Image 1 (cartoon, rainbow, N blue to C red):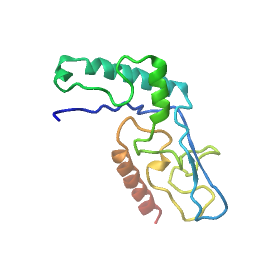
Image 2 (cartoon, helix red, strand yellow; image 1 turned 60 degrees about the vertical axis):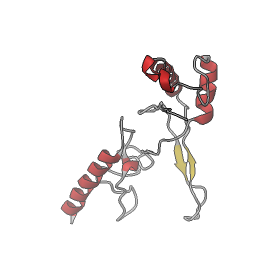
Image 3 (cartoon, helix red, strand yellow; image 1 turned 90 degrees about the vertical axis):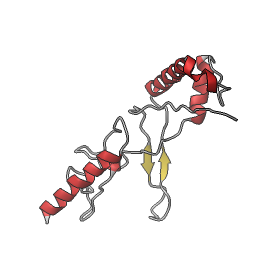
Image 4 (cartoon, rainbow, N blue to C red; image 1 turned 135 degrees about the vertical axis):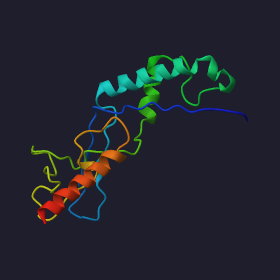
Length: 157
């Protein structure tokens, strides 16, 4: 009964890189998706730092009327306990990018005009072509990608 709050710490520009691979030649088979969370230790370090900042914020007098027990790791827990919790519960915040990365190198899926390399007549026009994650919501950049691609397609017609 009464009030409460929730806090979420995230790394807006993670250094860890995952992969999306084909499971089989069957086009209907689901892909193998490995987000490879926390494979770069700097991501883990930044999440731990964020958790410690949240602790300091929640110690402010303004939170005392709604303060209660934490759901997962208790406030003031040792780094090792927080790190174990981060590793156990890290997840996406549903803004994956880079699965069809744009670029000129061999690992790129699309060219600068959003055309899929080595596939005629197919373009990818969404957040998956971003080479890295932006430091915020992907909505506005996705709209920009769509608008730019529309201009490219109209210009090619």
